[in-house]
Amino acid sequence: MDTWDLRRLRILRELEQRTTLAAVAAALGYSPSAISQQLAVLEREVGVRLLERAGRGVRLTDAGRLLAQHAGILLAATEAAQADLGSLGGDVRGTVRAAGLQSATRRVLIPALADIQATHPAVRFELTELELEQALPELRLGSLDLVISDEYTGHPRPRPPGLRHEVLVDEPLRVVLPAGHPSAADDGPVSIADLREEVWVASAAGTGHHALVVAACRSHGGFDPDVRHRSNDADVQLELIRSTGAVGLLPVLSLPTADPSLAVRDVVDSTPVTRRLLLLTRDRPPGPALAAVLTAVRAQTDRLVSPLPRPARTRPRRPPR
Image (tube, rainbow, N blue to C red; front, side):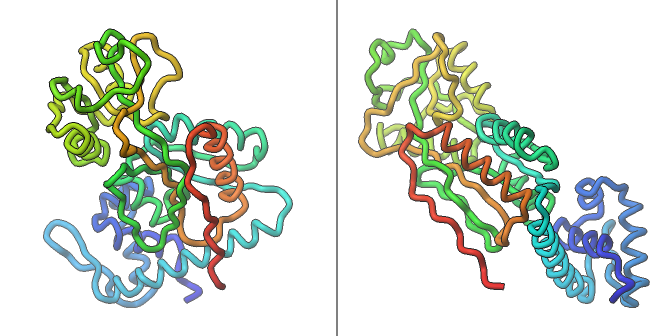
């Protein structure tokens, strides 16, 4: 046991989750041949075959899958030990890797990063803009430490085991129109039913936002919207509204503070249309560096959305040890 290299066990665990040597190499920053060499060394160390050929690639043997499961336990224990040791020191230091969707990165994570740089300069806080489908596997594998995701009214995200889901805020969606649109003539709310003849913008088909736009038009207006333009970039959606006369339904945090070319209006219908921002971490006690970042993220969310109605926040209990 003392001859097994924890880094090689991590590679094996990554292969179990990512399934190809190329994917493991891309995630860890090595060449596929270097990954193969490290796994060959691990096979010699443990004395059993861990890999077998599968077409042009490889797959884990039964022994490889068994060792990969134990590797996950060892890596989690190592992370917990690092957190416990870090809590004994007075200086908060370490690396925290975070990812979020575009609006959360810009409005929450970047300001939190600025706070951390000022208050905890020994913490290395790394940011990546990622959609949940890309970020979730990285969080579960340990390549990321926290993720900010979202979900829309009537379209909840899955809650996979092993992760904590904390609600940061429920924010309303607004109807966004070009400034000269007839429905923007006054400052009052707009009925979605009045926009049945309009061209709509939304995120890509299959996303929560696209499903929300279609569902809102059906439930609030009784029609299927003409979603002619699709982009997961809120800035692109806004430019389409400015330049082409299309309309959209966007969350508050995706909107500019002031733009005379756009008219932003409440939805007149009584059933609220909302987006929920979620803070995801692995289900284990955070180390000091991650705890400091989580505090900064929560504080920034509080400053940013204090006028909005907030859900009750419950702190997850520390699991028994």
